[in-house]
Structures are given as C-alpha cells and as structure tokens.
Image 1: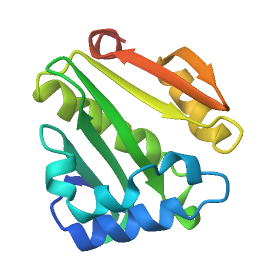
Image 2: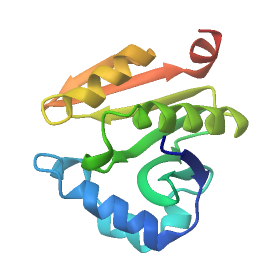
Image 3: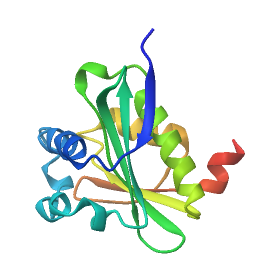
Length: 153
C-alpha cells in the first residue's frame, strides 16, 4: 500500500512545478489570473495562509493553498493532484489537512471558485464536503464553507 502524507511546504520549486502543471489543464486558463505575479513571490502571495504539498512515498504529487482574504475568511486555491495519482482519495485528504490548517490559523470560513464544466469531479467533491454555491457567472462557481459546520459533521 502506498503511503500518502500532507505537509506544509516552503519548497517553492516543487510548489511552482505543481502549480504550473495544474495551469496547463485545458479550460483552466481562467483560474490563473495574475499567475506570474503569484509564482514570483509565493511567500508574500500566501502570507497569512499556507501551501500544502501531498507526497506519495516521498514523491510530491498534489497541492492545495490557502490565501488570506480577511481575519475570518480564507480562499482555497490550487487544489491539484497529478492525473496518474487520481482516484485514490487524495483530494479529500488534501482538503481535510487544509481545513485543519485553516482552523488553526483562526479562520471561520473558506471560499473558493471553480469551473464545474472543466473540473466536474472537484465540483462534486466540494458539494459532498458541504461547500454551498453562492454565485455562478461566466462558467465560474463561487462556493463557501463554514469550518464550524465542517468540523461538526
């Protein structure tokens, strides 16, 4: 059985590699506004948040980031699992670790945007976890989740 571990990371070479691979998904281009600025200074871009990397047997294969919006709300960004590692429940494990980290940082709510047509599996996962869709415009769904509700499940 494979060992999967989620770690907070500041190894920006690994993070950039995973983020860039994610940015190349057909149809996901609109999710990467100001991407060069983000990549140029990940530490500043995610200040007050965190970047998590998932490792299968020490190989970095997944990522998720948490960006501070304000003192109570953070935005989930860059949830990505390399295609050859999908279907093993790693996205859920990445999100669970990220929710734990968000709560430890004092956030009450997390939000995200996604493109259901491009990422239907991720969209369905967000709904199963308890994210509520708050808006939909130009193919982009805005969703939010109360961490209090998530941890009471």
